[in-house]
Length: 133
Image (cartoon, rainbow, N blue to C red; front, side):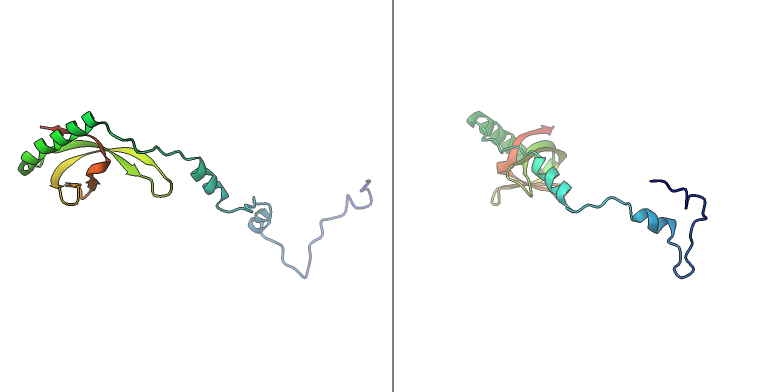
């Protein structure tokens, strides 16, 4: 196409309609996400979790021995390092977490460890525990 007949004419400015601001003009060309939340769903589906392992008999005996020693020293509120399995809130499985805190109480009735920071860890979720004594 040849635009020789209009190429040298001045740009038309309407007297009836106000000119669109540069911000509004730019918004016309902004990317459009037709599937909102899709990228979040994809990331969630790709996120991996671990399955909770079954501890062996020797490991369970060692954990019970450490807990018995800690219960004897409960009045000292010993500082402990606990590796435990934390279940995922959205998927099956979970992850390993490690925390360092002072042991406040061993709740034998509800099978929980109470820490000085307010956390309660189920005894069944503990993978390893060591004390700084």
